[in-house]
Image (cartoon, rainbow, N blue to C red; front, side):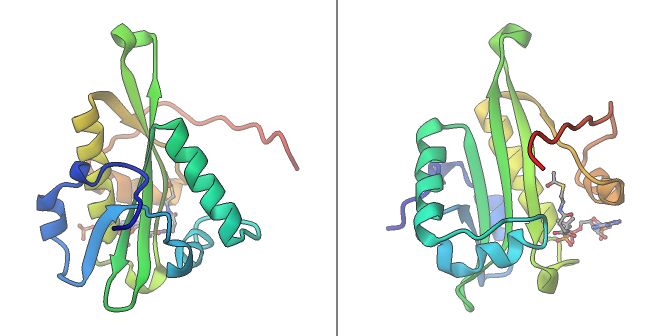
Length: 167
Ligand SMILES: CC(=O)SCCNC(=O)CCNC(=O)[C@H](O)C(C)(C)COP(=O)(O)OP(=O)(O)OC[C@H]1O[C@@H](n2cnc3c(N)ncnc32)[C@H](O)[C@@H]1OP(=O)(O)O
């Protein structure tokens, strides 16, 4: 049994069933390093050179810290991950000590886009957010992705501001 970053019982079987039978929607696993995760993530942003050791250390840190709900879609015929996304759950004092869910690092491998995998990833993160009692889910994105997120049921509100602390 693989070691997952969060409990598999949070995965919606209804959303899993909407995927092709060869595609498995599940939490990120500690042994996913060799399954093409970085082929996906590099299509999103700079990843840097990450060794298997570093990947496992980061996985363990994230699991220990809690609040990281990273999901993967694996093409089990190929043994390759074709989509990823994370819900990070922020504990707040506001809203009667509520929780806000941050949707982060959504990517579908470019060979698999346009097949509703992105929508399924967002549906799954929405499901997890609801199960965990998040009062809102928010994200930052490039303008070109606004139509995608609108199709997933989100609406445009406020603006993003950024300060990079390293060059
Ligand atoms: C918070 C963040 O992580 S922001 C970063 C988002 N990720 C990236 O930019 C990485 C590169 N891009 C990708 O990985 C993908 O293009 C994604 C994740 C944005 C979309 O994934 P896909 O699997 O291709 O999207 P999916 O097929 O589920 O599309 C769902 C709907 O959105 C629409 N859609 C998807 N992308 C776009 C777009 N750029 N412009 C307009 N509509 C879009 C689709 O046409 C579809 O509409 P329909 O239901 O009417 O047919």
